[in-house]
Length: 369
Image (cartoon, rainbow, N blue to C red):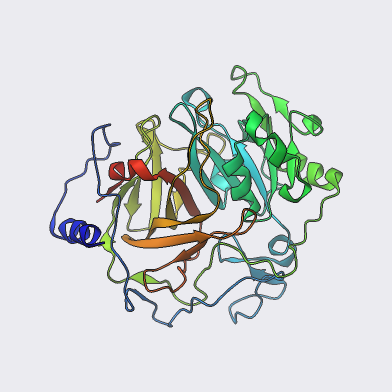
């Protein structure tokens, strides 16, 4: 702990010039931000961390119009029929041959982790999705993506899977729908890319697939989302370190984010260029970033097999600041909880959230400037 605090103090005292490009392979960060204390987080209206979700989305805000509830994915006001319906999760191909992607800018939450060979894959969570014209390309499942989607009670769409994921995919409670198998009629292959990087679908098709599956789209009684949002003014990480640049250390796509002070969003880059949704030209941008440092032994073929339960360190980034946090997950199908060092819940600002797994033994490659 003393070492982490020393590194954090050094970060505060060091001015680092960062160009608008991704970090080289030998660039190293501390893998840490700054530990929180009792007064690390503030809001002009004293935002409470006790805004846990239930099976009914919140409706008690004075700012909500009639017929609206608070989104479990963004904290923003959404129509009741959208906010009280479970979301969908789609496995998104992130190899260079599949770039640019379609429909990814509509995602409310985006999850990234290594899939194989140092290549990352994405899980995109959508709450209001039926009008998205094109989503993809879509690739195969790994177990930790499936369990991530389960934290949000999402209907999980994939095209193929690792053999190690078969047993988990077969469990009804995992809400998995295979676009290679029983639900193949709800996707198609495009002609602008070569297989296996050309499987796409539409929001309307995914809605139809969920309906055809017969699975409930109502949240289970007592459900609590892993994400908690301020219900007042924006929160401020008072004692966090400045963070105008963040890179999780993924070497293949060289992903990184730069903070835009005007929009108060972190804009995403990868493969030495802005990360763009080809269908609307929008660059991916996020209000919140959550980093989970994770362990786990890979499967015999090298496929990652990250720990699905336990606890560990992490980082929370929002509004130009970063701070050290901790995470805890007590059951395989339960939700991750995020805490400041004083034990209080991490409360996010309203908006889209990017979440990534960073392996414990690579945290030194995380860059925060």
